[in-house]
Length: 182
Length: 263
Image (cartoon, rainbow over all chains, first blue to last red; front, side):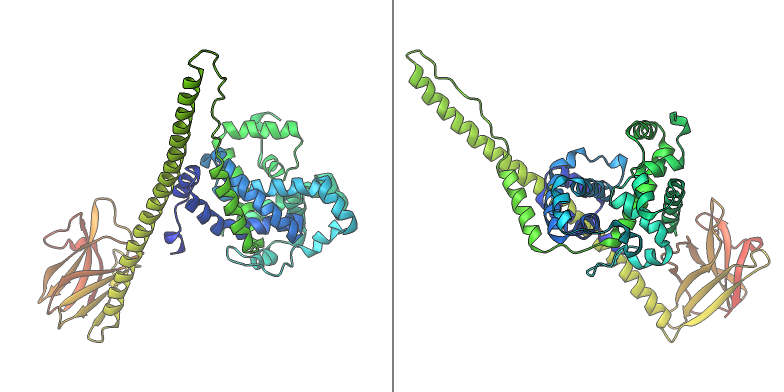
């Protein structure tokens, strides 16, 4: 029933490409939580996430012409814009400077995963993932997909052989795909 | 790694950002050519996207205003670059400059008007499609609500007789329900568990009155709207459903008797 009231994605994209502010406002309201969640997941800092959210939504507004619906869903495109920008920031000098004073250990991701407080579990929901996706699978996805680490770095952080990183990441995605179909 | 050797494993490595540039290019080239590979890659991307939604977090409310005022600024300062003019050296110089300036002002003004108009048109086009979208979904919800209210009334009516029609040897697993109110003569049918008819055929409901079949109408199966309002009848001793050619028959083909029950 909820999808019936939801605007068709085609219509939304048409509006965005025509630079309609109402369309963009709809987009913002629909996706702000998901996009902000991704940025925060990457940078793990609210102030930085606030700046990046503005920058990323401006980027979406300016670059919407380059979105091609044949290549995938709108959210997937936006997510990649947000993720790439946030990971770039994570690797930038700017961030590393602030990090020296406020250091955090990457290996905590193996167990921490996410304990953020203001989580809104609407879609499949974090709980389902926490229940069904093994911690070692989540750790790999978090480190690779949200932190942009290489296989070698992940092997080092998790203290597992490189081959295990490969097999685990494949198994993790297989499991994720299966969960989406169920 | 040639394009036809790209496997699911490569797609996963690519999605995770593990591939060196050269191999990533090969995957991209393969994705551009191979539709089934592309579909699989999109599925991987979508599953990661769905996973990412698990981390939803509400941003501070003031960010919205800031973003939208940035957008308003950006729309205002659209490149209104106008050609620079060099002052001519003839005697007509000043007239020319004056005329040029007047033209510039007018062009600039028109440009502004046009871009405002375009913005307004874009807004309007979007709002219109949004409105149509809402009207359609509202109408369909209203229809659904009406159907459901009607069905509920039928099912709740204490004067109704509920007759469970049971499968015959021809269709042992079939089942359907008739709700009949002899006072108002109304007959409603719940499609229950009737198998899809073969193409060119339809189900037809019959009331048996003093041994004679009376046509109560044909119907299509529809799981989202399983209760149908059929014909009216004041007396009946039994109800039955047969498979008939599309549009129904004047008398039932008893070889195709699906379900039947006495009242």
